[in-house]
Length: 487
Image 1 (tube, rainbow, N blue to C red):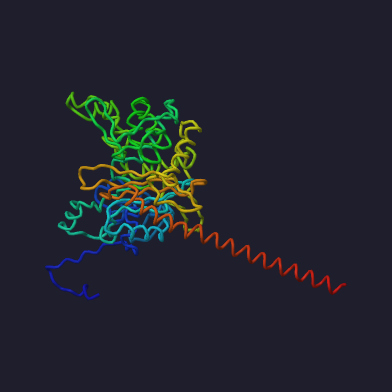
Image 2 (cartoon, rainbow, N blue to C red):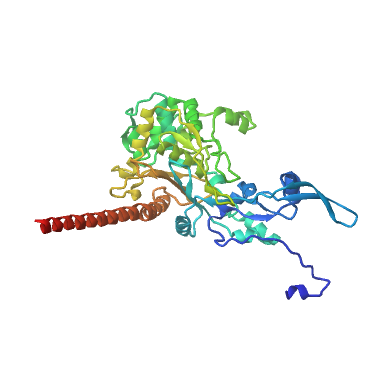
C-alpha cells in the first residue's frame, strides 16, 4: 500500500504475477519454472486459449504439463443493446479446471542425494525398474526456481549462462558424456549376439597392440586370461578391444541402437538430447575432409569401451540398465506418478512400454549374471556396493574427458539383483575412478533407500507377526481355560 502512495513521475510501478517455489532449488531441473508468456509464445498459443497475461511453463514439468495444469478458461459471448443491457447469450464455453500433477520424486531421497552432491557437479538418477517412474533426479548444481521465475538482471543472467558448472543445464537429459565402461554392457551384448561364445578368452597383459597403435587396459599389469563374465567383473578393456573387432562395427551399432543409444528415451522433461552413436555413416556426415571421414579400427576399439566419439546422457544409460533389469522390456522414463482432477478423480500415470529388446533370453541372462560380479566377485570394481543378503548389480566406468583434470566417474546398476526394483546411475564430473566417487554416491543412496523402504517394511511385518502370534497365544490360552472349567 505504501508503494501505491508514491507520487514520483520518475518511478514506474509494474505489476506481474509470479509463482513461489517453497523448496526453491530442490529438484529444480525436474520441476522447472513459469514466467509471463512471451509475445512469440502468445502468438503460437493464443488458439489454445492462452492470454497475454498468463504465466507459462518454461522448463521441466512446468513446461511439459503446462496445458494439463492450466485447464481451459470459460468464455461467454453476449448480445447487448445500446445501453449495455444483455439481450441474449450468443455463445458460451464452460471453464475446465486444470489438473494437479503429482511427481514420482521421493523428496526425502531427493534432498538426501542433493546434499550428498554438495560441492560436486554431476547427476544421480534412480528409477523404478518395472514402471519407469523416477524417484530421484539430481542434476548438480541445482538452481533457485524463485530466481529463475523472477526478473533477472542482465549481468547475473550472463554469469549463469557462462558458468563452467552449467547450473542452467539439466545434465541428466542434456549432459553429454563418454559413458566409459558402463557402455561395456552394450558392447558385450553385441559381442554375444554376434555368436561369440561367452567362454571365449583373451589374454590381458596391460596393453593391446593394433598395428602401430597401443591401447591401454584398465589395469597396467593386465588381468590375465579373461572371458565375458570376468571382463564385466574386472572391467577388462582388452576383451572388448579384441572381440568388438571380431563382432564388427555393424553388430555393435545394431545392439547399441537396440538399447537406445543415439536416441531420446522419451522422458517427460523437455530438452533431452540424443547423444552420439558413431558409425562409418555418421563419420562421413560429421566431418568435411575426406581423410577425416574414414572409419578406422581405432574408432571401434575406443567406442567398445565407451570412449572415442560415443556420447550418452545419464538418462540413456539409466534406460539401458532399466531394460536389462526388466528382462529386456524397455520403459519410457517419467517423473509423474499421477494426475488428480478438480473433482478428485485420480488418473494414474501407467507404464509405457517402448519396446522388447530383440536379443536372446540366454544372452540377456548371461549379461544379468555378469553384472552381479563387479559387486560380489573377488576382483570386482564395485565392491563398495556389497551389502550382505542384499545383492546389487552394477558396472563402474571411468570416462576420459579433455575438459577436466580428472576423469568423469560413472556407475550404473540395479537392486536387488534377484528381483530388481530400482535402477540407478551416477556421474560425478571430474570424480576420477568410477568405483570411488560415483560408487560412494550409489552406496549412500542404496543404504538410504533400504532403510526407508525395505528395513522399515520388514520391521513392520515382524511387528505384525508378533502381534498376531500374541493374539493367537491369548486365544489358545482362553480356549484352554474354558476347557478346564467345563471339565
